[in-house]
Image 1 (cartoon, one colour):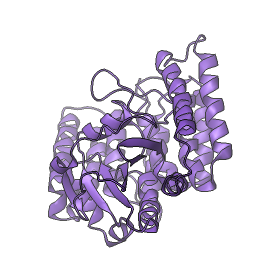
Image 2 (image 1 turned 180 degrees about the vertical axis):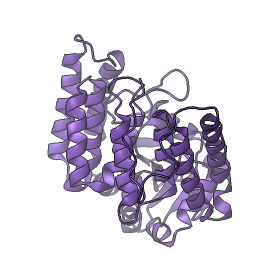
Image 3 (image 1 turned 180 degrees about the horizontal axis):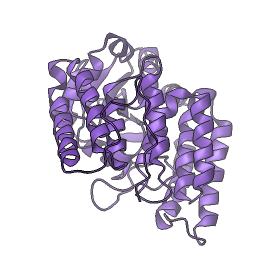
Length: 367
């Protein structure tokens, strides 16, 4: 979910940068990954273009990209192999794609890359902490890296033979330099302020140039940059404005807040309110939203409310059937930990679950 311009903690030890357009394809064998949807991916072959889309089933941007990826593959007349790699357990991906609506939108192969090893090989070891991305590969060379929702134009140019790989590489290198500047100065210190100004200026330029369909995730990333730059008041004002204009962004904004280390810049009350609004919205109340709400209440020092929210997540996950058994087991473990914390006498505001008819009082912010 983090912006390509922003620093993110690594989940794989020391950071590596990943590939750039023009680099050789580092593709490992995908046959070791479990194919959960469609036909198992074939090995690279001459004359065919491969698109690897790195997604998460819970992510709105990933979900919005599914029909775009399907359309791009089908428009190629068989010249493109489209593969989605979800950084989640196979059971969770299978449960997501068991829904008829999502299955119809994902008309290509989907495999599970639960530990993010393949993703990290292409996008760097910080990649599991970032948003969805797509990589286009032709004849053993990386041609383009970017947001899956924006793949159609570059892919068509690659198919037509008019793509400028060198220009694509220069743009990617510029973005990487901005990211490295952020990693060197991740705190809101006076010395870092000019660098964060550059990051924010770059994001503003991308937002202005992006089509309307791509602006919301970029604006979410901008709120994250503001928080990391120490401009919390401005960040939360931007979140409120964006949540009002694009309610679907509320869970994503909440995740940005939950990722902030404990301190005065982490407004857990805002995160909880955003998640509650998402749950109460038409089509809301998904298991992942309830699970995030449980995590937010736990961070806010209310394990009883956390356990109630996680119970709702478990109910929703169970409705997905046998494919979600592993996820249910993990949620039950989390819920049991929350109940033990509540029994140990930690603060508990009320027994009723939040996000429904019983409004919850504002939680205290944990520092």
